Amino acid sequence: MSDDLLHAAREVRENAYAPYSHFKVGAAVRGASGTVYAGCNVENVSYPEGTCAEAGAIAALIAAGETELTEALVIADAPHPVSPCGGCRQKLAEFARHDVPVTMTTTSGDSMTVTIGDLLPAAFDQSHMDR
Image (cartoon, rainbow, N blue to C red; front, side, top):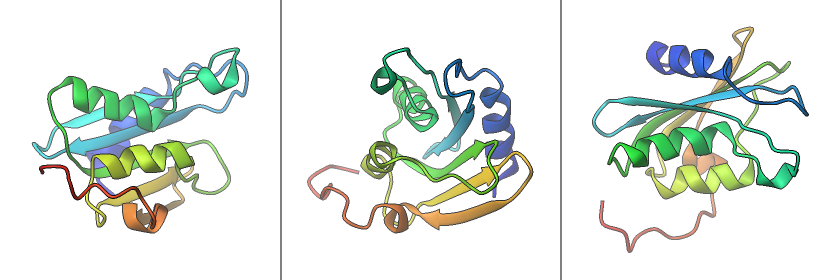
C-alpha cells in the first residue's frame, strides 16, 4: 500500500458528504504520470444520484488530462475492507490495465489488495482503446 495514496484518501474522506448513510469513503488513484488524485463520496437525497469516492478520484484524474491509472486505494470506516461497487469496478477497469492493484483499507488499518482483474474479471473489452 502506497503511503501517499493512503494519506490522500484518508484526508479527502474527511470531506465526504454523507448526511444520509453517515458512511464516509475516500479514494485515491495514481495516474500514469505518478500524480495522485483523490475523491470522496457525495450523497444526494435521491440515493442513486450520489457519487462514489472512486468516481470522484477518476474524475479528477480525467480533469487533469490523464487517461490511465496505475494504482487505486479506497478507505472507509468499516469493520472489514470495503470493495468498490460494481459501477466503480467498471469505471476503474475503464482506465486501468487488468493487473493494476486496488487496495481496500479501513480507518483502523485492516487492508486487502487485489487487482482490477480480480474485482471485475469479466470487464467490458477495452482492447479497441489506444493506450
